[in-house]
Picture 1 (tube, rainbow, N blue to C red):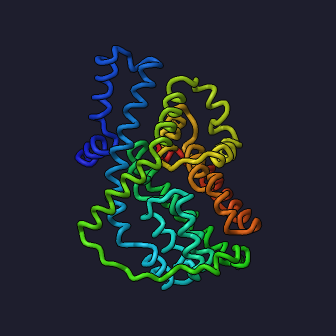
Picture 2 (spheres, rainbow, N blue to C red):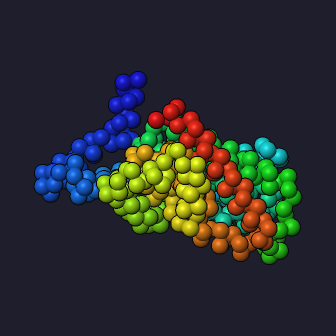
Picture 3 (cartoon, one colour):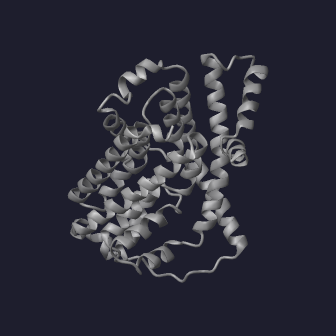
Length: 334
Protein backbone atom coordinates (compact mmCIF):
# COMPACT_ATOMS: atom_id res chain seq x y z
CA UNK A 1 0.00 0.00 0.00
CA UNK A 2 2.86 2.39 0.79
CA UNK A 3 4.39 1.70 -2.64
CA UNK A 4 1.03 2.29 -4.33
CA UNK A 5 0.51 5.56 -2.44
CA UNK A 6 4.02 6.71 -3.34
CA UNK A 7 3.47 5.93 -7.03
CA UNK A 8 0.05 7.61 -6.94
CA UNK A 9 1.46 10.72 -5.29
CA UNK A 10 4.51 10.99 -7.53
CA UNK A 11 3.16 9.82 -10.90
CA UNK A 12 -0.44 11.05 -10.78
CA UNK A 13 -0.60 13.86 -8.23
CA UNK A 14 2.99 14.80 -9.18
CA UNK A 15 4.05 16.01 -5.75
CA UNK A 16 7.56 16.47 -7.15
CA UNK A 17 6.15 18.98 -9.62
CA UNK A 18 4.19 20.70 -6.85
CA UNK A 19 7.43 21.16 -4.89
CA UNK A 20 9.33 22.42 -7.95
CA UNK A 21 6.62 24.98 -8.74
CA UNK A 22 6.61 26.08 -5.08
CA UNK A 23 10.37 26.63 -5.33
CA UNK A 24 9.92 28.56 -8.60
CA UNK A 25 7.21 30.84 -7.23
CA UNK A 26 8.86 31.49 -3.87
CA UNK A 27 12.53 31.66 -4.86
CA UNK A 28 12.25 32.63 -8.51
CA UNK A 29 9.34 35.07 -8.35
CA UNK A 30 9.80 36.10 -4.71
CA UNK A 31 6.13 35.42 -3.89
CA UNK A 32 4.48 33.67 -0.96
CA UNK A 33 2.37 30.71 -2.12
CA UNK A 34 0.15 31.15 0.93
CA UNK A 35 -1.14 34.52 -0.25
CA UNK A 36 -3.59 35.15 -3.08
CA UNK A 37 -1.22 36.19 -5.85
CA UNK A 38 1.43 33.57 -5.13
CA UNK A 39 -1.19 30.88 -4.56
CA UNK A 40 -2.95 31.69 -7.84
CA UNK A 41 0.28 31.59 -9.83
CA UNK A 42 1.28 28.31 -8.18
CA UNK A 43 -2.16 26.76 -8.83
CA UNK A 44 -2.07 27.82 -12.48
CA UNK A 45 1.48 26.69 -13.31
CA UNK A 46 1.23 23.41 -11.40
CA UNK A 47 -2.18 22.36 -12.76
CA UNK A 48 -1.42 23.36 -16.36
CA UNK A 49 1.86 21.43 -16.48
CA UNK A 50 0.40 18.42 -14.67
CA UNK A 51 -2.67 18.20 -16.91
CA UNK A 52 -0.66 18.56 -20.13
CA UNK A 53 1.86 15.90 -19.07
CA UNK A 54 -0.83 13.42 -18.05
CA UNK A 55 -3.00 14.24 -21.05
CA UNK A 56 -0.19 13.74 -23.55
CA UNK A 57 0.81 10.37 -22.10
CA UNK A 58 -2.75 9.15 -21.70
CA UNK A 59 -3.99 10.25 -25.12
CA UNK A 60 -1.03 8.49 -26.71
CA UNK A 61 -1.87 5.23 -24.91
CA UNK A 62 -5.61 5.56 -25.55
CA UNK A 63 -5.12 6.43 -29.22
CA UNK A 64 -2.79 3.47 -29.69
CA UNK A 65 -5.54 1.23 -28.29
CA UNK A 66 -8.19 3.06 -30.31
CA UNK A 67 -6.24 2.38 -33.52
CA UNK A 68 -7.56 -1.18 -33.22
CA UNK A 69 -11.15 0.16 -33.28
CA UNK A 70 -11.69 2.31 -36.38
CA UNK A 71 -15.32 3.32 -37.09
CA UNK A 72 -15.86 0.39 -39.45
CA UNK A 73 -14.65 -2.14 -36.92
CA UNK A 74 -16.57 -0.47 -34.11
CA UNK A 75 -19.76 -0.60 -36.17
CA UNK A 76 -19.03 -4.22 -37.04
CA UNK A 77 -18.64 -5.13 -33.36
CA UNK A 78 -21.81 -3.31 -32.33
CA UNK A 79 -23.79 -5.00 -35.11
CA UNK A 80 -23.19 -8.41 -33.50
CA UNK A 81 -25.14 -7.58 -30.34
CA UNK A 82 -28.73 -6.80 -29.48
CA UNK A 83 -30.63 -5.17 -26.60
CA UNK A 84 -28.95 -4.07 -23.39
CA UNK A 85 -25.79 -5.97 -24.34
CA UNK A 86 -25.43 -3.80 -27.45
CA UNK A 87 -25.94 -0.65 -25.37
CA UNK A 88 -23.31 -1.82 -22.88
CA UNK A 89 -20.76 -2.64 -25.59
CA UNK A 90 -21.48 0.70 -27.25
CA UNK A 91 -20.93 2.60 -23.99
CA UNK A 92 -17.69 0.70 -23.33
CA UNK A 93 -16.41 1.40 -26.85
CA UNK A 94 -17.20 5.05 -26.24
CA UNK A 95 -14.65 5.08 -23.42
CA UNK A 96 -11.76 4.27 -25.80
CA UNK A 97 -12.63 7.06 -28.24
CA UNK A 98 -11.00 10.32 -27.10
CA UNK A 99 -13.67 12.54 -28.61
CA UNK A 100 -15.51 15.58 -27.30
CA UNK A 101 -19.30 15.77 -27.71
CA UNK A 102 -19.08 17.62 -31.05
CA UNK A 103 -16.59 15.25 -32.68
CA UNK A 104 -18.64 12.24 -31.53
CA UNK A 105 -21.64 13.33 -33.59
CA UNK A 106 -20.20 12.42 -37.05
CA UNK A 107 -19.66 8.89 -35.72
CA UNK A 108 -23.22 8.92 -34.38
CA UNK A 109 -24.44 9.83 -37.89
CA UNK A 110 -22.35 7.10 -39.46
CA UNK A 111 -23.53 4.42 -37.03
CA UNK A 112 -27.19 5.44 -37.45
CA UNK A 113 -26.99 5.55 -41.24
CA UNK A 114 -25.42 2.08 -41.18
CA UNK A 115 -28.54 0.70 -39.50
CA UNK A 116 -27.52 0.47 -35.85
CA UNK A 117 -30.44 1.04 -33.44
CA UNK A 118 -30.93 4.59 -32.21
CA UNK A 119 -30.49 3.58 -28.57
CA UNK A 120 -27.15 1.92 -29.27
CA UNK A 121 -25.78 4.98 -31.05
CA UNK A 122 -27.01 7.25 -28.24
CA UNK A 123 -25.25 5.09 -25.65
CA UNK A 124 -22.07 5.76 -27.61
CA UNK A 125 -22.89 9.48 -27.93
CA UNK A 126 -23.38 9.82 -24.16
CA UNK A 127 -20.37 7.74 -23.15
CA UNK A 128 -17.76 9.06 -25.58
CA UNK A 129 -17.42 12.64 -24.27
CA UNK A 130 -18.48 11.81 -20.71
CA UNK A 131 -16.20 8.91 -19.83
CA UNK A 132 -12.82 8.01 -21.26
CA UNK A 133 -9.73 6.32 -19.96
CA UNK A 134 -7.93 9.64 -19.61
CA UNK A 135 -10.67 10.98 -17.31
CA UNK A 136 -10.11 8.02 -14.96
CA UNK A 137 -6.47 8.94 -14.43
CA UNK A 138 -7.01 12.69 -14.31
CA UNK A 139 -9.81 12.38 -11.77
CA UNK A 140 -7.60 10.16 -9.63
CA UNK A 141 -4.75 12.66 -9.90
CA UNK A 142 -6.96 15.51 -8.66
CA UNK A 143 -9.29 13.72 -6.24
CA UNK A 144 -8.80 10.01 -5.50
CA UNK A 145 -9.35 6.59 -7.02
CA UNK A 146 -12.71 6.04 -5.32
CA UNK A 147 -14.20 9.14 -6.92
CA UNK A 148 -12.57 8.31 -10.25
CA UNK A 149 -13.88 4.75 -10.43
CA UNK A 150 -17.32 5.74 -9.15
CA UNK A 151 -17.55 8.50 -11.79
CA UNK A 152 -16.73 6.06 -14.59
CA UNK A 153 -19.25 3.50 -13.33
CA UNK A 154 -22.14 5.97 -13.05
CA UNK A 155 -21.20 7.52 -16.40
CA UNK A 156 -21.40 4.11 -18.08
CA UNK A 157 -24.69 3.34 -16.30
CA UNK A 158 -26.12 6.64 -17.55
CA UNK A 159 -25.05 5.82 -21.11
CA UNK A 160 -26.47 2.27 -20.99
CA UNK A 161 -29.75 3.20 -19.27
CA UNK A 162 -30.26 6.29 -21.43
CA UNK A 163 -29.63 4.37 -24.64
CA UNK A 164 -31.84 1.46 -23.52
CA UNK A 165 -34.75 3.80 -22.75
CA UNK A 166 -34.40 5.42 -26.16
CA UNK A 167 -34.32 1.99 -27.82
CA UNK A 168 -37.59 1.04 -26.11
CA UNK A 169 -39.23 4.28 -27.29
CA UNK A 170 -38.66 3.45 -30.99
CA UNK A 171 -37.46 6.91 -32.00
CA UNK A 172 -35.96 6.13 -35.43
CA UNK A 173 -38.63 8.20 -37.20
CA UNK A 174 -37.34 11.33 -35.47
CA UNK A 175 -33.97 11.15 -37.20
CA UNK A 176 -33.70 13.40 -40.26
CA UNK A 177 -34.24 11.42 -43.47
CA UNK A 178 -30.95 12.45 -45.10
CA UNK A 179 -29.06 10.45 -42.44
CA UNK A 180 -30.56 7.20 -43.72
CA UNK A 181 -30.12 8.14 -47.38
CA UNK A 182 -26.37 8.51 -46.96
CA UNK A 183 -25.20 5.20 -45.53
CA UNK A 184 -21.67 4.70 -44.29
CA UNK A 185 -19.47 3.33 -47.02
CA UNK A 186 -17.88 -0.01 -46.29
CA UNK A 187 -14.17 0.40 -46.79
CA UNK A 188 -11.52 -2.24 -46.53
CA UNK A 189 -9.77 -2.25 -43.18
CA UNK A 190 -6.06 -1.74 -43.60
CA UNK A 191 -3.94 -3.60 -41.07
CA UNK A 192 -1.68 -1.07 -39.40
CA UNK A 193 1.91 -1.77 -38.44
CA UNK A 194 3.27 -0.85 -35.02
CA UNK A 195 4.95 2.18 -36.57
CA UNK A 196 1.60 3.22 -38.11
CA UNK A 197 -0.13 2.95 -34.75
CA UNK A 198 2.60 4.98 -33.01
CA UNK A 199 2.36 7.62 -35.73
CA UNK A 200 -1.43 7.67 -35.41
CA UNK A 201 -1.18 8.02 -31.62
CA UNK A 202 1.31 10.88 -31.92
CA UNK A 203 -0.96 12.65 -34.40
CA UNK A 204 -3.91 12.23 -32.03
CA UNK A 205 -1.91 13.73 -29.15
CA UNK A 206 -1.08 16.79 -31.24
CA UNK A 207 -4.61 17.12 -32.60
CA UNK A 208 -6.33 16.82 -29.22
CA UNK A 209 -3.84 19.11 -27.46
CA UNK A 210 -4.40 21.72 -30.16
CA UNK A 211 -8.15 21.36 -29.68
CA UNK A 212 -8.27 21.55 -25.88
CA UNK A 213 -5.30 23.67 -24.78
CA UNK A 214 -7.30 26.89 -24.62
CA UNK A 215 -10.07 25.27 -22.58
CA UNK A 216 -7.50 23.86 -20.17
CA UNK A 217 -5.90 27.29 -19.68
CA UNK A 218 -9.31 28.90 -19.16
CA UNK A 219 -10.44 26.13 -16.81
CA UNK A 220 -7.26 26.30 -14.74
CA UNK A 221 -7.50 30.09 -14.66
CA UNK A 222 -11.07 29.93 -13.36
CA UNK A 223 -10.03 27.26 -10.86
CA UNK A 224 -7.16 29.44 -9.61
CA UNK A 225 -9.53 32.39 -9.17
CA UNK A 226 -12.07 30.29 -7.26
CA UNK A 227 -9.37 28.69 -5.14
CA UNK A 228 -7.60 31.87 -4.11
CA UNK A 229 -9.86 34.88 -4.64
CA UNK A 230 -13.50 33.92 -4.03
CA UNK A 231 -14.31 33.57 -0.30
CA UNK A 232 -15.51 30.13 0.75
CA UNK A 233 -18.69 31.48 2.45
CA UNK A 234 -19.76 33.05 -0.86
CA UNK A 235 -19.40 29.78 -2.75
CA UNK A 236 -21.03 27.60 -0.11
CA UNK A 237 -23.89 30.10 0.17
CA UNK A 238 -24.64 29.44 -3.48
CA UNK A 239 -23.52 25.84 -4.07
CA UNK A 240 -23.16 24.34 -0.58
CA UNK A 241 -24.32 20.77 0.03
CA UNK A 242 -27.16 22.08 2.19
CA UNK A 243 -28.68 23.86 -0.81
CA UNK A 244 -31.25 21.61 -2.50
CA UNK A 245 -30.80 23.39 -5.81
CA UNK A 246 -26.99 23.19 -5.97
CA UNK A 247 -26.81 20.17 -8.31
CA UNK A 248 -29.56 21.55 -10.55
CA UNK A 249 -27.87 24.94 -10.77
CA UNK A 250 -24.45 23.43 -11.50
CA UNK A 251 -25.91 21.31 -14.31
CA UNK A 252 -27.75 24.25 -15.89
CA UNK A 253 -24.67 26.49 -15.66
CA UNK A 254 -22.56 23.82 -17.34
CA UNK A 255 -24.78 23.31 -20.41
CA UNK A 256 -24.04 26.59 -22.28
CA UNK A 257 -20.30 26.04 -21.86
CA UNK A 258 -18.14 24.08 -24.26
CA UNK A 259 -15.05 22.31 -22.97
CA UNK A 260 -13.59 18.87 -22.65
CA UNK A 261 -13.56 17.17 -19.27
CA UNK A 262 -9.90 18.21 -19.01
CA UNK A 263 -10.87 21.88 -18.88
CA UNK A 264 -13.58 21.35 -16.27
CA UNK A 265 -11.48 19.31 -13.83
CA UNK A 266 -9.53 22.28 -12.36
CA UNK A 267 -12.82 24.12 -11.77
CA UNK A 268 -14.30 21.08 -10.03
CA UNK A 269 -11.11 20.74 -7.96
CA UNK A 270 -11.36 24.35 -6.78
CA UNK A 271 -15.09 24.09 -6.04
CA UNK A 272 -14.66 20.98 -3.89
CA UNK A 273 -11.76 22.63 -2.04
CA UNK A 274 -14.12 25.51 -1.21
CA UNK A 275 -16.75 23.22 0.30
CA UNK A 276 -18.95 22.44 -2.69
CA UNK A 277 -20.34 18.90 -2.70
CA UNK A 278 -18.54 16.37 -4.88
CA UNK A 279 -21.86 15.53 -6.54
CA UNK A 280 -22.41 19.19 -7.44
CA UNK A 281 -18.93 19.42 -8.97
CA UNK A 282 -19.40 16.20 -10.95
CA UNK A 283 -22.83 17.38 -12.16
CA UNK A 284 -21.19 20.54 -13.49
CA UNK A 285 -18.56 18.47 -15.31
CA UNK A 286 -21.19 16.17 -16.80
CA UNK A 287 -23.36 19.08 -17.89
CA UNK A 288 -20.43 20.67 -19.72
CA UNK A 289 -19.23 17.51 -21.44
CA UNK A 290 -22.47 15.62 -22.21
CA UNK A 291 -24.87 18.51 -22.88
CA UNK A 292 -22.72 21.31 -24.27
CA UNK A 293 -24.71 23.81 -26.31
CA UNK A 294 -22.53 23.56 -29.47
CA UNK A 295 -22.98 19.78 -29.51
CA UNK A 296 -26.76 20.10 -29.07
CA UNK A 297 -26.88 22.58 -31.96
CA UNK A 298 -24.99 20.11 -34.16
CA UNK A 299 -27.23 17.26 -33.05
CA UNK A 300 -30.33 19.32 -33.92
CA UNK A 301 -29.15 19.28 -37.54
CA UNK A 302 -29.58 15.50 -37.72
CA UNK A 303 -32.51 14.76 -35.37
CA UNK A 304 -35.95 16.27 -34.95
CA UNK A 305 -36.92 18.43 -31.98
CA UNK A 306 -38.80 15.69 -30.14
CA UNK A 307 -35.82 13.33 -30.18
CA UNK A 308 -33.47 16.11 -29.09
CA UNK A 309 -35.74 17.03 -26.17
CA UNK A 310 -36.00 13.38 -25.10
CA UNK A 311 -32.20 13.02 -25.23
CA UNK A 312 -31.64 16.19 -23.19
CA UNK A 313 -34.31 15.19 -20.67
CA UNK A 314 -32.93 11.68 -20.11
CA UNK A 315 -29.34 12.85 -19.72
CA UNK A 316 -30.29 15.79 -17.48
CA UNK A 317 -32.37 13.61 -15.16
CA UNK A 318 -29.53 11.09 -15.03
CA UNK A 319 -26.99 13.79 -14.15
CA UNK A 320 -29.24 15.17 -11.40
CA UNK A 321 -29.75 11.72 -9.88
CA UNK A 322 -25.99 11.07 -9.97
CA UNK A 323 -25.18 14.49 -8.49
CA UNK A 324 -27.62 14.26 -5.59
CA UNK A 325 -26.60 10.64 -4.91
CA UNK A 326 -22.91 11.58 -4.75
CA UNK A 327 -23.67 14.45 -2.38
CA UNK A 328 -25.70 12.14 -0.14
CA UNK A 329 -22.85 9.65 0.21
CA UNK A 330 -19.90 12.03 -0.21
CA UNK A 331 -18.43 10.87 3.12
CA UNK A 332 -17.55 7.60 1.41
CA UNK A 333 -15.34 9.34 -1.15
CA UNK A 334 -13.57 12.23 0.61
